[in-house]
Length: 498
Image (cartoon, rainbow, N blue to C red; front, top):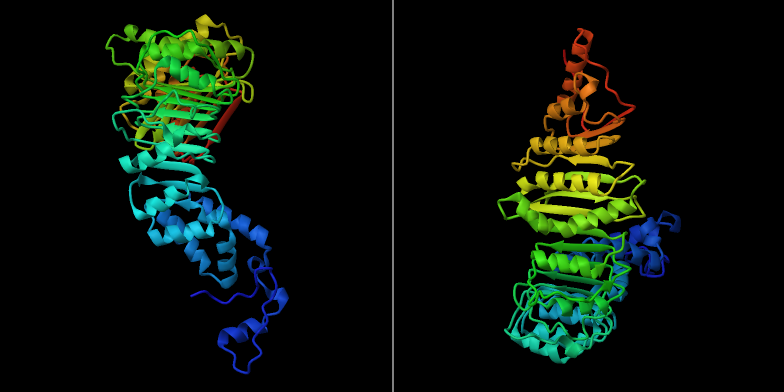
């Protein structure tokens, strides 16, 4: 039941009833003076709507049932809230084929003419889905995992004049489908998982974001794909993951994407990866992410697959010459996967980055060494990058790999002046620190190292290393003080004992 409200929808005081019989709630409401109103009760409608929108954004990534449950709970707070929520049409414009048919009717009614977002698992034939299809002219976004033949046939013959975002898959019916009769003039974001679409349709034009993922059959040929990119000069994000192209013949097409901010090419065949990198004129400000599977047991035979990535690395390092860049090796848990990468990033705000994820994890050290040599030998770099090591969880990728990379970096980029170590798992850093600060300064990997930053969950281990080093120095062990200008320690706590 809706509770009493001390302010109406205009933020004014509700007068107490004039009858001689007052309920307890009526008496309480009548006895409160205007200056005693809670701020949220007197809040202007426009500001209250902004607050509600921010609150409901937290539920956009949750199941649709949780979204409407939260909406209904807030509606029960008081009559004023209920009125405002019912009149805020965009709050009711998120629908799902999983919703009860009566709730679909209510949402369609209260959303009035607001553009609709359709999201859910499957858009399958049902009375409720029929009502969604009847409002296709109001769709702003469609994000469903799969379709059946009934809904696919409906979508193939009805235009969606206001559709801006399309995320589909996986569904495949053996023959390419032209969706929405090819009439989606407002379409800007397309995510296609395994789904049989007609790639040459005008639907794929003027896009701002394109994501093709795990399309193992029915994918585009290279020329058609490059034609899609050519027709989308305002593209800002492009991702192609584990997708088979139907034809990998060399293409003469060159594509200029001057607005591209993010490029992700993951798990592609060697010739496809090279063709795409060669064909796309990638701005230096673009952040590039590559994921490669090095399945050949002879590491040298994997280098041709890495060459397009090395080419991009050399180009970025060349334009970043003389600026402050960063080389990051390592990673952390990302969902159920261990996201271990090597990343070279140019000057913030000016140049983009190159990130490489390698499978299997054990090959990351070899790849990192290869790219470090590219930085040092192919592109002379008067200002060596700052080094950033992120020690991952225990995945078989122990800190011995980091130390191997550290030695290679020391051999190739001895002029490095800054190193940062992130160690959330509290690894034993003593071997790493012995490499950085040997007992005699004559054998230092980085003679110019002046800044060391350590961020770890617990500082006991490296602090004991520092204590032991100091004790050896006091006892005449010939150990010099840490040759640093700056030592920064973050996180955790230090507890030393004698």
